[in-house]
Image 1 (cartoon, one colour):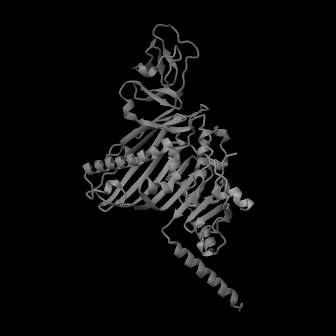
Image 2 (spheres, rainbow over the protein chains, first blue to last red):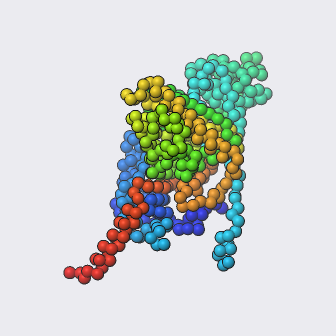
Image 3 (tube, rainbow over the protein chains, first blue to last red):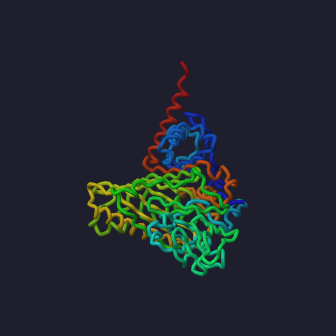
Length: 92
Length: 387
């Protein structure tokens, strides 16, 4: 078996989040206030409007840096404390 | 000590694994095309074998297995005759398509007179070769994007370096996620860093400010100082990275394209190459643009020399032990794995989009304050009876 990321196995795994805009379900993990990981699958990507817009035009090779709707969803979830921030020192 | 503690207290062992026995599927840059266009066959050690690169009379660059299928002569020691390369042993003539076209002392070419030929791409001043252990041609959607500045008079010519590294080429690919190493090894301090892996591309977005205390090229005080940078660097396949890089200097903006690429010689050796072009601008004379390209190349050379010193002494490690501040090493390697399995064995997890973002432009305290306010608002709302 391939070795696994010790941060996911010994720490916290990625958790499902649905985008407030398109409903695409991705996996999210925040190791700190400033760090965010997002795992997509092909179904989620097909449903993402910003991804479709970024990859269907003539400037397609540039790709999509960030889906702003998803960022807003994750931001709201973070502020509502529905996403765990792993190194949140407020918790002590 | 509890059982849990003793389990976590065990000595961590390094899984050094083994370098892959095959070479990555994908386009690999063999260097500037110009050096292969001198009318002579060139010998290139790549993908665990010897190749011959030669230019046909019609201008096309060709890459063949270097060993003649007749008696094993080395075609790279031969001569170019018209559109063919002639073996130095018995003058068998091989075309760029890998077929023997003529044997001067024989009436007929025997059956099976076909050698391995690699698809090539001569683009933006560079020669690319397509490697596929399964022998398939490149799919239409697996391409190297054009680099606009490379053929424009408004940009400098390539400043190009290449060097041999005694390590497996995964080491250089790992750099794409290694944030900490940019600070310690390359003296740059990203305030925003993001990796996106998707399909056959892996991108690193980086915006930041320089670390002027350490950048060696700024020590003498006579040159322009870097106040910030904006970099979008994408691996198109396993080995070729294009970095669109803008430096904010105290004297204006400098737009650059940096190539970071490699090709494997063997499982434990690769040729590392990097090239730079700089856009000429109103604020810089032509001479200054060229000097900037040369100075950047020197700076990058210095960075890679430090990397190489690390690589040649380190062990291969398949199970790196990571802290939360590290980048997505495992996810990058999962992406990289797609190039080492058969095309029909590529799994969705290797190509599915993954993002890793670090944004330090918003202070932690601002986040915390907003959460506290949010929670306080909710608590207040809960206390207020519904009207």
